[in-house]
Image (cartoon, rainbow, N blue to C red; front, side, top):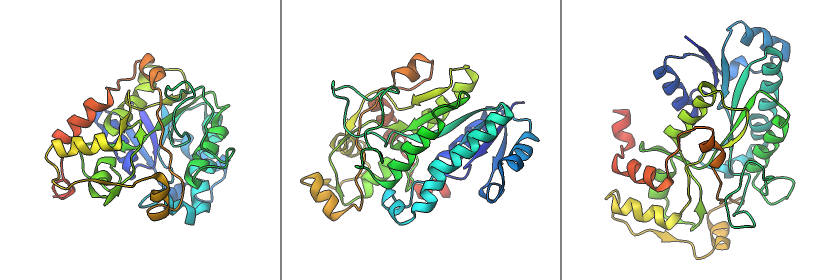
Amino acid sequence: MKKVLLLGATGYVGSDFSKLLSERFYEVIRIGRSELEGRSISELVDSWGSHAADFLINSAGYTGKPNVDACELDKANCLHGNAVLPGTISKVCQQLGLRWGHVSSGCIFTGRRGDGGGFTELDSPNFSFRQNNCSFYSGTKALGEEILRDDPSCFVWRLRIPFSNLDSPRNYLSKVMRYDTLLEAENSLSYLPEFVSACIDCFSLNAAPGIYNVTNPGAVKTSEVAQMIQNAGLTKKEFRFFETEERFMALAAKTPRSNCVMDSSKALAAGLKLRPIEEVLRESLANWVWESKVSA
């Protein structure tokens, strides 16, 4: 049985990693925050090395609750979780000769490429501290990728607005259903079960380490998602939209948002299974499970 070190196992993304790894008969060794705080690189090398793990997954990022606006008020923890911690993990894994994967974000981009296509892994982030146009969250995620750029054994998996069929405060579909007023925008999304499965497959398929846009092919507008929700019979309300992004920023947000389209061709070429976005959206809504039923 292969062993996996998993950081952030109790989070929205990490809990799915924990579940699927166990279902695939990996031995999951969960690393909690208390096991990281105040420990030197050499101490972590000794501790993690004692497990003789086959690989490590870091899903312990900092996103802020209920959304990225909260990161503006907790910048120290945001910077540590999204940039400092990945750098520490990289040093430990390099000393151990351990392959590992880091959950990054597509929120380091805004819009589309100049040619109208989606951003690829070769494009430099255009929503970061270097452009001085981003949220603090997006800035730290871009900085985290810079820190990992020269790590030859690291997978950088870009997650983009995760969702599934399970109602949750972190689920994009749940947010759309509950927000009073929506911002019309076009985005790539990540169906969480396929995101997690694809990331694990990077190891089993012996994919080349590096950056991967792990988003479902295609893009959707907010109004299209709202229409799908109505068509699925999950709400009878009429969705309202802000007249402009400026109105959204004035009334509902404290920091700029990333809305972008990404190209997942590299992930597909590596054999990672990601179905078209409209297909998995409709499937999720057709099999929707409300939170009360999940916890019952």
